[in-house]
Every structure is written in C-alpha cells, then in structure tokens.
Length: 179
Image 1 (spheres, rainbow, N blue to C red):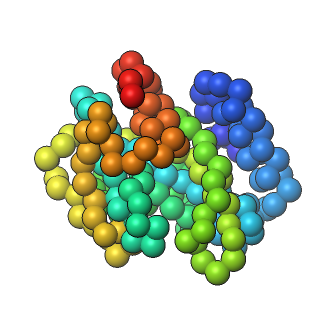
Image 2: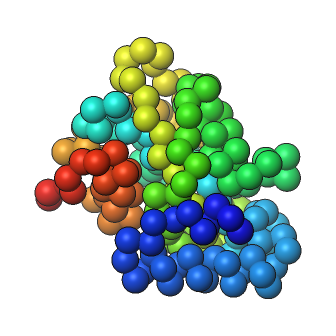
C-alpha cells in the first residue's frame, strides 16, 4: 500500500510494524475493514495546534479514556487519509482540516471495547494542524467530550499517545517532549 511506503520509519519498531501491516494486507484482502478479525487497519489523526503546544483529544465513550481522533475504515473511504479526515470531522465537528497524507506513526494494540469478539487495531496515524479557538470542537455520539490539552500536561500517560504527540511535533519541526 502506497500510504505505508511514505511512513518515516524513524526506528526499528516502526519499520517492523510497517512490514507487519503490509504482510497483513497481502494475506487479507479485507484487512482494511473491521470485519477482518482479529486484526484490521484503522486510521487516526493527531490534531496539534499551529504552535504545537496543544493537542485535540476525545474522551472515548466506550473506553472511558482520552485518545486521538480516529477509528475504523469504511468501504466508502477512498484511502487511509480519507478515513482519517472523515473520522476527524465526525468526532470533532472540525471539517475541512488538511490531514498530512504521510503517516507520522503506526501503532498495533488490542482493543477490548470494540464489539463482541477480540480485535487488534493496526492503526495508521496521521497529523493535522489547526488553529485553536477559531472553531470550537463538538463531540460526537462516540465521545463524552472533545477538548484541547496542553502537550505538557496530557490527561493520559499512555505511552502510545505520548509517542504519537511527539511524532506529530517532530513532523512540525519541534523538539521532543520532555517528561
């Protein structure tokens, strides 16, 4: 898949994930869709403020945790980027934000709140940059809340979220976060 070819595999772990994702897609023609079990690709987007000091997060209704915006790929999505753009608009009410078409990070994780059978998301993560305060975000039915958070005090110590914010900031030319 061309989108995965554009990933800046900045470490061996990202390179291994890219290879695993491509192998999954080669073995499973339906590997992009949630019906492919237990593994399927998902698309998400880290939305950073234009100064890279804030990140837009959603308090996921089923999980009860703060995450970046994103979710399942639908058959109508023309690409992974299109899926990320759709999820961004659906989950935040912020339509028309440009999503960088080159992924910033991959993350594979088990999902215990996603349907009746176990699933593992092979998440392809993108970056969007937005001005804070111009258009306030609006939560969808999948979210309890959507809010801007200072990157220096994220509401989660989840390593994958911290790594994603760092990857997005790196793409914007910022130094890594110190924690």
